[in-house]
Amino acid sequence: MLPLLSSAADTVTVFGGVDPIVLADANAPDTGGLADFLRGFFGPLFLVIVSIVAIFFLFTREITRFAQFIILAIFIGIVFYVPGIIEVIAVALARAMGVSTE
Image 1 (cartoon, one colour):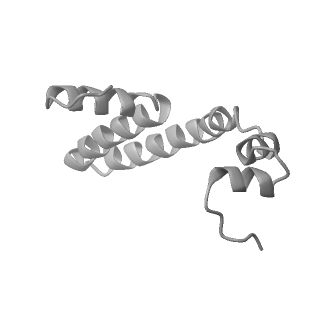
Image 2 (image 1 turned 135 degrees about the horizontal axis):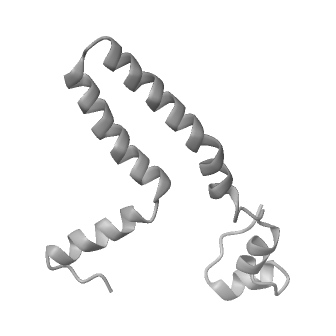
């Protein structure tokens, strides 16, 4: 167990002079393509589920629920297929309210 450290210099000394952040980066798994893989795997599954539920609502003639479901599915699909849109919307809202985004 490591003793309580009072400064960053003590931390580097405990780890043998190697910066612990470098150790964490060197041992971290490469997850660069994970988001693309998951999007490619769950994307078609999402579309199939949306299609089945939409067809069910149409055949049972529940037009109001169908419209609500389609609107919700479109919003979820936009967030799923364009994940950068959340940051763009957040920055736009912050700027509209006069908050500095720098």
